Length: 461
Image (cartoon, rainbow, N blue to C red; front, side, top):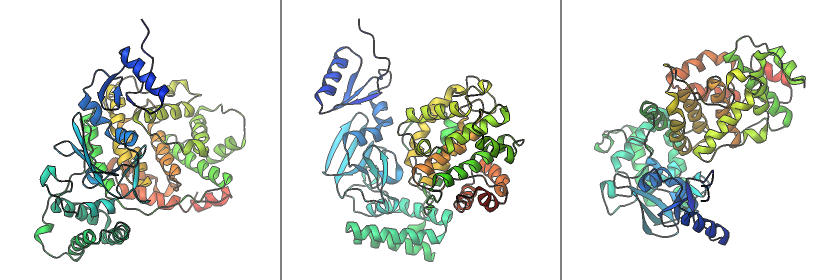
């Protein structure tokens, strides 16, 4: 009997290619895979089709319906309705039923440049576009409606105002006006503008008396307390509106200069005995590093200064875990006692149960990918790594590294931990204080140039 292939993707999609179609047919006949929905097969015989479809709905939409876009309430909630409906703008209007989920396609405009790319060829409406879509008339109510209720929309806008101030609400109003002009949604904009005006002028109104709208992501948590905390943090991050801070260190020398200080300051947080001059000598000296105190720093610098490696961000939960292990193995390749590239294999009463780490990281991936801006995705990754602590050593190092890979991939300034803000940074980790990360990001965006000494002076070192 032929052996089962060592590795098969969890989901396999039909293709118009004869070679792929023949391969699927052969695997189906041999019992290696099974069909769970039209054009969808799986190698996972343990989970129900409903569970598999729900957990992978973004990948399914991105693979089978290129150009599709999460819209209306789904672009804000990032979860199915209580009836299992997902609202998608596409090239036609139709309902397609999959195990556990009904995809409600609504014919509408293609994604705009400001809309968010989620998975494969799947997009999601920008916040401004989603708010306008939720101002549309719906023939059904409650969980059958394609739109959120007015009370829910008001709650979301009030939350944005509380978290970011009236200025951001005015910016949102301006952007929504631009989107409305592009899509011919003047009527919807007038409704949204009326609500924003009431909030900004603080006029008493019944429409403003509403509970907070809960923005949750579909998917069952593996470690309940972690996912609960992540959901709360996700809701907070999803309502933060920040302007871009484009990368200024565009030359090879400038990028490496920043990577040096980024790596040194990150490593120094874990090892206060590191000396700046010794670190500089290591970078300038091409000989292997012998001093164990500096191996971690050098491994981190080798990655942080590699533009190509820093631009790589994962597209699947499996790739996320693989990239974490790979980068950890590079940093600690000369330190076998740190178990380079290996997740924890023992419990620590202070940390998450090691048996739950991999599952929790996979669940967390959808939250991270669901955020709209590079800054919020970066901060979310930092949170995920420090909460799960997948490695025996170097979780802080890894948290700061993956945070910056997300920014580099979007051509945004990286974040270094300014010596003047180290205490605030440590405090912010305990309190999940996003404002400190924003302050660090703005500070870091001012650090650039081909002169390392000048860069050092600009940082106050």
